[in-house]
Image 1 (cartoon, one colour):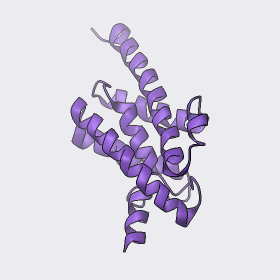
Image 2 (image 1 turned 30 degrees about the vertical axis):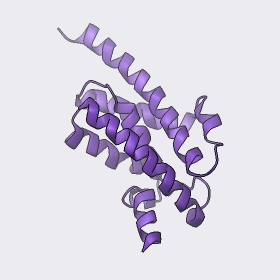
Image 3 (image 1 turned 90 degrees about the vertical axis):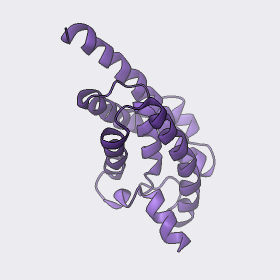
Amino acid sequence: MKKQFVTFVATGAWSGLIPWVPGTFGTIPAWLIAFFFIKGSILWMIAAAVVTLFISVWAAGEAEKQFGHDARKIVIDEWAGMFVALIFVPFSLTNYMIAFVAFRFFDVVKLPPASQWEKLPGGWGVTMDDIAAGVHANIVTQVIALVIRMYFTG
């Protein structure tokens, strides 16, 4: 029973089991939760990020025993990173789409400190590079959202 539960959580409600770009497909449920349920609430977004971070560290650490270190199937870390990418981002479809694309970009590119944090042991290494990618994506999204507000809206 524990193995099935760990698999469910670590694979982001099985979204990470999609064989083609599992990181991207694994991020989609978190984005949907943020867009349709959290809807820009700063406190709920911070809570989602913090809770998911710790769930991810645990679940990813346990799932590594089944799948290996930072296996592509493990996507709960993408959930944590996506929630971080959306903290303080003004709620709109455009801004949330920008954050999604930026997060996926930075998760793949792994700018410092993501590349260093990825080397941490167990679930910490699996999760913390996505937290760094989320911070990078958040900064870029905030800048782009500001530019849009300044130059493209009344």
